[in-house]
Image (cartoon, rainbow, N blue to C red; front, side, top):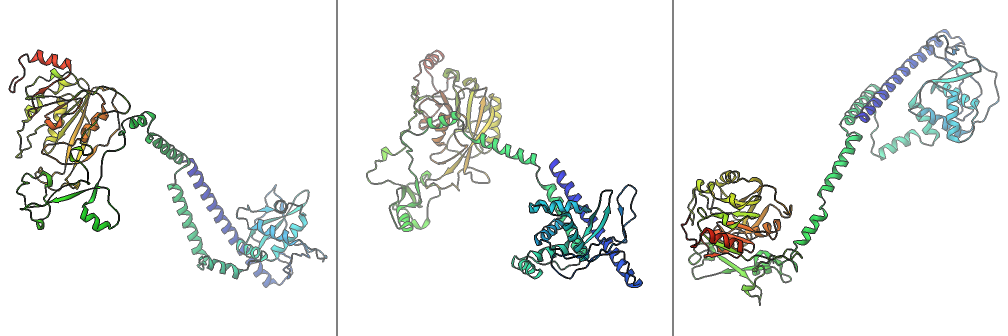
Length: 566
């Protein structure tokens, strides 16, 4: 802020200096006009302004004159006396002056930063410095007398105890600039032509309007200075940008984790062609062979192609009688459907070797099953049959039954992934709080159909068709050895059977907590995974592998578990 304030003060001082110069010039012009008028009336040989005139444009002088204006105030005590008499010296021989000295003197006088009044000694020093050689003071004073005779400047003679010096009191900036340009070979016509060539417009307005315009421009410059950032603000901004850049850089640990979870042997996923069928792809591309996967139409006896595609495609409940067009994958020649890429999931984490526990499951009523038998786990995932007040192809649970589930017995610290939809979104948050979890994140599954297009005719939703589902993420305690920032919170995956969640969720959870025990509640047979224990009432019997779980199970249910047991 200090830099901006100093800039504002500099502009104000410059503006005040310009106004003072304008007032001084106005007074001097009035004094000159008064002196000229007095000379014409009296016709006397004496004048308040005495100058030496010259007709030659060359830098020669023949007389020495001392000029004072009648408007000057009387001298104060202690200051050099101002002489008001004109001393005319006898005619002298012409002295040749170097034209370069005159040019340099004009340049010094044209400098807008020149402080007036200024002594001839100061001007002589400035000219000598610019020429890199010594210039006589008498030569400079002769040139000043010449310029005074041409009414370009106003000079006064200041006498002191040692000697008398000339002092430049005021000057005509525009005339001096014109003379300087002429000596440098730039005429007024050439200057105007140059301005026209450069696209500049010559200002022909009155002096008063020009001054007002200049003042308004200075006011605008002050406003621009106020809106500018100070040096400290710019420094802070650069520092913040550097900090953000450093924070966005992955750490060595994060890079090692990413390398650790990369797919072995490259990606096993094959991309679908956005054009759908091979026929459409050949019609559009017309060149080359597309290496992506395509679909082919399933045309049955009852199919009517003019009706278009089925809205539910491969999830249609009436595939055998539906008259709309359905599709299946058009596999390349020699490809075996049973060995499709990605049909067998592997759970190897980088180069680390740890024993993967085979999939385990228990067919039970999760409302009554004693979940403490399973011990503690790092992650719980649940896809409850919420009562969303719609007709569903499976049974549902009431809100109170959901609240009373024994989920707290499964974890002292860890994560929970809870799938919710519709009105269950608020109920799910309530259940997380009752079970001792804090909701820290939310994962969204964007649903696509068989042709990899976003679903527009979902089977759920009261007012709008639902094309997505939410999975609330909660945390309990302070879980250790978890991998942060590995995956995104958006899943784009194909819809399959009813309530069949995407398999990508297992990869996300495995990368979050690799090699640990996990429990899924309300699972079905297609949900069983290595390192997971699945609970649900649609599983094939009971399969437990870990010995500690087997011992606790036999102790709790010595006669075995049967559906309906408490």
